[in-house]
Image (cartoon, rainbow over all chains, first blue to last red; front, side):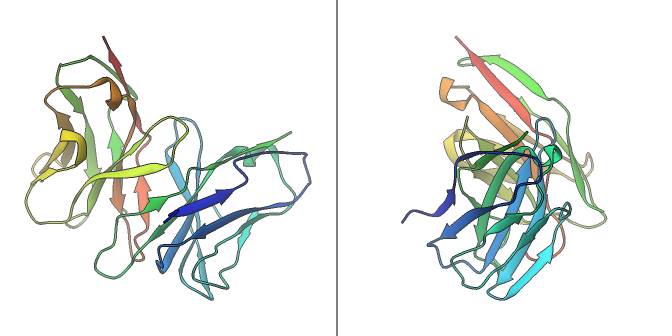
Length: 114
Length: 113
C-alpha cells in the first residue's frame, strides 16, 4: 500500500497562474483533508471531505477549490496564485466514524509563488 | 473554541537524557488530544492519542504523555533521547466533527551528542 500520494512534490508558479495539487489514497478512507504548513504556524485546514461528492471549507479556504468525485482522489485547485500561497501543502486521510483523530499524511507538496 | 499552546518552539537535549515537550490545551469539555511527529521533509505521523480513557498514554518509540485536567496540560515525555528523535512535534486537539484537527505551532527537538 502506498498510503497517501501527493504530486507534484515541488512546484514554482508565477503570480496569477493556476495549478492543481493531486492527492490520492489507497486506504479506502472516507475522510480526506488538505492542510497548509507555514513556518512557526503549525498546520491550517484548507478544505476537507467526509466522502465522495461532499466537501466543506476549513479554516483558510480563500483562493482554493476542491472536488471529491471518488473515494481515492481529492485534488486541490489554486486559482490565480498569489505569493501568500507559498507554503507546504499536506493531504491526509482518516477512517472516520468512532476511530477518528488519526490522520495519515502524504509527504507534502512544496509550492513557491513568485 | 478548542486550542492548544506549545510552550517551547525549540528544545535541545543531549542523547540519553530525558525529553519534555510541553503542551497546554483550552477546551470547554473533555478534549481528544494527540501528538504528531514530523521528520525533516516528511509527512506527519501519529505518535499517541488521548481520548478520555487512561490519563497516561503510551505511544510509539518510547514516548508517552499524561493528560492532567487540573493543569490543562498534555506534556510529551521520553526517558532517554535518541538521535533519531530529532524532529518537529505537534500537539493537536480534535475540534468538532469529521476528525478536524487544530495544530499547535510545533516544537523542534534537537538531540546532540
